[in-house]
Image 1: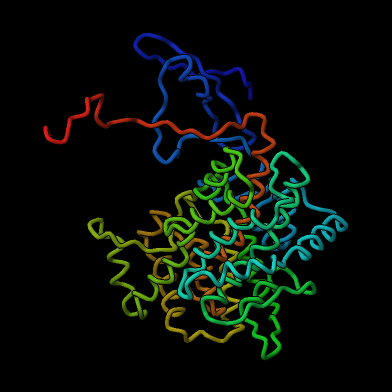
Image 2: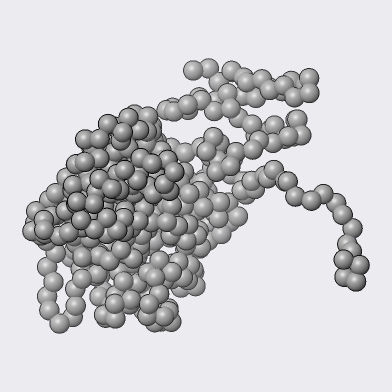
Length: 430
């Protein structure tokens, strides 16, 4: 499509022309970058839901089609045929690696999984009942105090090292945050295990006995990581980009992303879903809660159904459901009350015309919560696991932004509706 098209805006009889740009996929974009300079006005877009904040070549989402592409590859193919570290390479570098490139990358990540021994003191400084996400925000932010050789954002080699360190060390940090909250000793990573198996072992092994990771659980964990690796310009990714625009070091930027992810409207969705299943309690109460979900006057919502972006099926949900079935079958916990509620709720919701008309299908959070519960993770660990997954997406977006010649410090405008100028009144006259 021609890039010579323009959109015309008329204000008080004055006409302004703005370029209409065509992306490689998705809707056209009206470039308003010069609107304020030319017309003295700016746009108002709460939540930036109709505003493009950057150019990116990493991830594309078509919510109407239910499509998620990483560097052009559909997520279902990546989840079925690839594995997490290969997807990490794809997100970071733009193409799938050769066998030699993948082996080198996997070796690099594996040998960066240990964290500085003195960082253990940071964990011990938190209260024993601290939420793992609070621990992760603090520890990841503190990495800049330990890894001075990878904080110069203007040095491509330091950016590379920081990227590898963050992807490699995040599972260790998350696992240690979990171990600390349950009073168990930290378990160190092992170089003979893959990424997902290493994480599971660091979470569930104890020094008193040998721990063997089941390959089905490891594969399910790897899929969870893969399916959450990146999701375009969501709240936490936008937070990372905004922090990065100021020139902040990479560890500070990712810590900011973790803090944003902690919000229940973002990374806490699968935890909220599981808490809803516990609230329902038993399958015979499901009709009551479905009726509440249909009632416009009832604030209750069915968590784990529908998605803000996807107006059709969540492309990640099908793969996650397959993993859920495999894990539940392996662990033989079909009689778990929460899981019984989940399966019956899914069945009744999919058979209900109301949910079909509203396109409220089970999303990735519905199934991921079930898998993590079955594996033995407490709900407090759901969002930290999400953070482990999403780190590669944040890092990829951070690296891309730093090489963008159009990058400038983020500075959203506001529609001011407060008091106008007024003089200070002395306290005795108020």
